[in-house]
Every structure is written in C-alpha cells, then in structure tokens.
Amino acid sequence: MAVFLNRSQSKMILHMDGDAFFVGVEVAKNPKLKGLPVVTGQEKGIVTALSYEAKALGISRGMPVFRLKKLYPKVIILPGDYKSYADYSSKMFDIVRRYADDVEEYSIDECFADLTGLEPPLKMTYRQMAERIKKEITEELGLTVSVGLAPTKVLAKVASKHQKPDGLTVIGQDEIGKYLSETPIGKIWGIGAQTSVAMMKKGIKTAQDFVMKDVSWVREHLSKPHEAIWQELRGVSVMELDPHSKTEYSSMQRTRSFHPATNDEVFLLSQFSKNMEEACAKARHFKLVPKAVSIFLKTRDFQYINRSFNLISPTNTPEPLMALVREHFKGMHMKGVLYRTTGVSLLGLVPEGAAQNDLFGGTDRAHKFEAVHKQIDKLEEKHGKRMVYLASTHDALKSKGLGTEMEDLDRDLLFL
Ligand SMILES: [Mg+2]
Image (cartoon, rainbow, N blue to C red):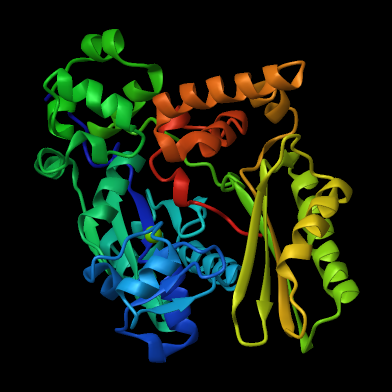
C-alpha cells in the first residue's frame, strides 16, 4: 500500500462512543446499580440497552422483557428515561467542545471531533486531550466512554471500537495496516451486510484486504460512498465533519407524570393529548411523519401497559392520532387502578411526503398494501429486516455520508 502522508498533512479525528450509554446514565443517576445486571426498555417491552454485566449473562438487545423475566429473574429492568439520556448526551458533547470547535454529534452517544492542529495552542498531545475528555466525562458525569484517535473518521470509528468499555486507542498513519488486518470487512462503519457479503465472495475478508485493492478495482466494483470508505481506511481523509448535523430523528417520545396517581379517564386522555400535541409539533418542526405510534400507561405500582399501532396514512397532526389513542385506551384502562404516567412515542419517522410517495403510493386500498409489501420486501432484501423504516428515514433525510447501509442506524434514536 503506497500512502505517503507526513504528519503535517495528516488530520487527527477523535471518535467518542458512550459505553452501554442508556444503562450508563441509569447507573450515573443511581450508583447503587453499579456492577449489577441492568437493562432498559421496560416501557417498550423489549431490551433497548444492557449493562456489561447483563451482557455477560447472555442477554441481548431486542429480547422481550417477559422472556427476560422468566430466564433471568434477578436482572433489574428499568424504563427508558429519555430526557435524562438527552441531558447527559449534551453534557458529554459540551465536554468535548472544551477542546475542539468542530464537533459532529453523530448520535445520542457518539460524536466526532477534529483535533487537527490543536496540540500547540492547547499545549498537550492528542492523546492527552483524549485522556482529559475521558477523565472529565467520568468525573463530572459518572459515565465511561471509549475513544478512538485516527487520521480519518472511518479509522477513528475502528479505533473507538478496538477497546471497550473505557478504552482509548490511537491509530497512527504507520499502524493502520495492523489494525485493519484484525478487522473483518463487515465491521467497518458504512459497509452494510449486503456489501460485506459481496466483498467476501470476492475474497475480501478483512479491511486490510479491501485497502490492498487499487482504485480502479474499487471504482469498477463498488459505489462512490464505498470509494470514500476505501480512501479513509487508507488514512486519506475525505469525509468532512459536519458540526451542524443532527442525529436522524427516527422516533420522538413525550411523557407526563402526575401526583396524585389517578383513575380519571378524562384526565388521563387529556394527558395523552398534550403529549401527542407536543410530539406532533416537534415532528412537524422537522417535517417528519410517523409510520407507527406507541403509547403507554404506567400504574402507581410501576406496571406498564403498552399499545402500538401502525398508521395506514402517516400523519403528524394530533387529531387523527388521538382518535386511535382513544380506541386503544379503552382496552388499557382498568377500573380501580391508579395511573401515574402517560407516554406517547411517534415511531418510524420519515420526511413528510416520503411516506406517501415511497411506501403508500398506490391508488386503491388493495394496491396500496401490495405496493407496501413489495417495497418492504425490496428494502428488507437490500438492508436486512430491521433496517426497513430506518433506512428510508435515512435516505430521505439525505443525511450525508454513506447511503443506506450505516450500521448504527438501528440504535441511534434521539429522543426529544
Ligand atoms: Mg455507544
């Protein structure tokens, strides 16, 4: 591989990634949970995040809560507290901004920062900056993060993954090959499942096998975004940081708790309605519409009652959505039970118009469903089962970068 860059031309990009972030925040809020198997996702009925201790037991993300309770009765199951996650997230990014001006918030718990040229003014090495950021996050917020430093964004991602949790990995220009030969091609940021299978058929097993290919091979066999990844893996920075980019808004949640707990149907529905209005207002602000809605009631005894429904016609106006909530509410509300919280989530957000043109394009009803299923089949074939709505969100938001195969989309939900 012939890449000759001297240090003055080379960039220094930091990638920071929260360790088991949602659970990390829960432990920061309640340090008694430290060292215990803890999961979040009670309100959704599936595990959304898990501590390393829970992972060690064999629990994984997406496991239904009822199964978890049966198999691992000692695991602590918490509801997601998205307001706190967003708070900790912005505090974490603020700490990174003490050192760097160019910070790209990539997801709720991940950012890139360009540290290039900051050694003289800050009077410290890049490694020291990363150490300081880690230390301040741990001391001030009670969280641990893993950090990677490398000449490009794609390599910084490789670096931050290299050692987790609480890791710090620096990949210098002359060490790239060593790290890449340890990294399977499918683990590279932006290389999706389909592409990695195709590459493996061509004998490319590791990222190092990929960078050994020459540019004409890359252009002949792969798309433009993959050429960018190839460049970045070689240590040539071609992907700019976007300090203004925001996370894809794939879901929005609003909840309300009240004292005293109540059974009053009119009051509870009014709380749902307020949540819905706020969530819809936010969705309209970003010109997004949900394809599904999920609602919950929490009892005084912290039991959750959930309902989810798909929308035939996606909308971000609260009235039609509240009509559906009222329908479902009848089956959720029980006599004599006191409730303390209501919550509404708009799920599978896509840009206004995209939902209709994209998935719901047919004229008559039968046609619609047919079109939907065809489209879904196609998308699933292309992106894998879990990517369906997120991939289209990603596409339509024109979130820059690497097209529809970004690996982290399915967990990068930013809850407003
Ligand atoms: Mg993380």
